Length: 287
Image (tube, rainbow, N blue to C red; front, side, top):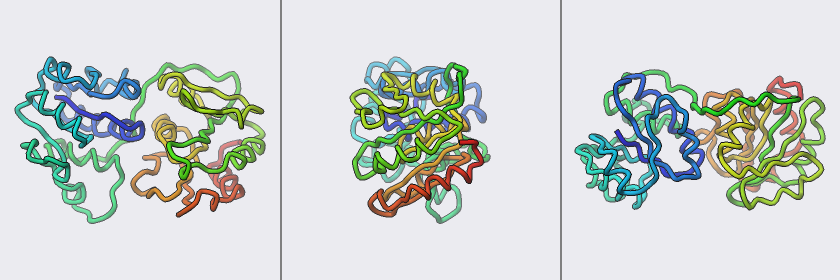
């Protein structure tokens, strides 16, 4: 089998419950995941995945799958699905050019038998149920990285986001960091991110996703905007507080995690610093 999941970080993390359901049902299957290099570490080391492939037509052809599932839905992933030459090609029925797929997966609500808003993890897991996997409770996301014991307890703070309208004000993240008494604040970012506003604390610009995985695995707390790192924290079982702007937390909340979500329902500055502090306290983490 070939699973195509090109991006983004959160989507990749939330694909792992579906992969586990698949392997629990059919451990004999050899499963490859095709992902962009910057997200490939989400799947590396996962016992549910036999190979992680680059998003190139030749890689799909060489793998020679009997079934290809496109979880991405864009035109590039559509052509990669065709390039795999798989006899069976599965994609959700709402995808563009749905005629490419001879297995058109219905809406998750139809599969689950519940007419409600579904979480992204449920959306992808439902495809496995429709394809024949035994119905089961959808597990937490699964990530794997080396364990590096912490010298002292720390909280990971992700104060950035993919868009300005998804970012809580930097000065409020600083207020939260200054209020922590038992945890060292560690502000994280990716290549090209400017962490200078947070220089009074430890900062870590992670040059690879693996760096983020290693750091997050040993954290005692995560506080951040609705973003990929929040899903990483949830996968590792780190207690977390996540701040949402206009995104729907029913769809994007940390999956099966000890978490508190705060929703602005508009500009992020609607979320008060005191509310974030109270959410951290409600988690019961000595902060």
